[in-house]
Amino acid sequence: MKHTRKQKEAQLLAEAQSVIEEFLNWEEQTDKPNLTQIEDIVLRLRERLGQRMATVAIEDQDAKQPVEAPACPTCDEPLRYKGQKGTEVASRIGEIDLERGHYYCARCHSGLFPPGRPT
Ligand SMILES: [Zn+2]
Image (cartoon, rainbow, N blue to C red):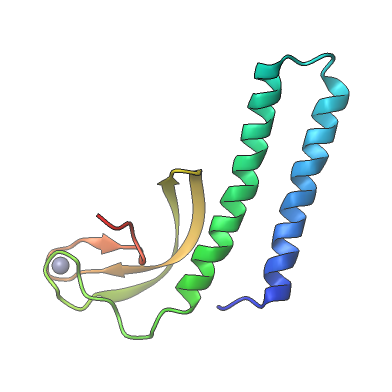
């Protein structure tokens, strides 16, 4: 399902607010943090907001996908749509949890979560 700009904004604002809350709580509870402690919390919270942005972008891209099944990257057979499935994607901005369309190749029995990762 394609999300409106308003829906995406609401999702991102909610995540940003929760990140800011956690940061302020941490700041109140941490007496004289050193630079390493500050780096740790900032990197962790930044990662969370980044993951949310990536999720918004990827889910929207998923929603824009054409109804025709993509071709199998291995054998070029048209893939079968198997419904939405949760998947965890490792990325340069950390693990991202996604609900994405899952496709299956009947010929070579491989599964695919488009858009996948370019190789
Ligand atoms: Zn195949």
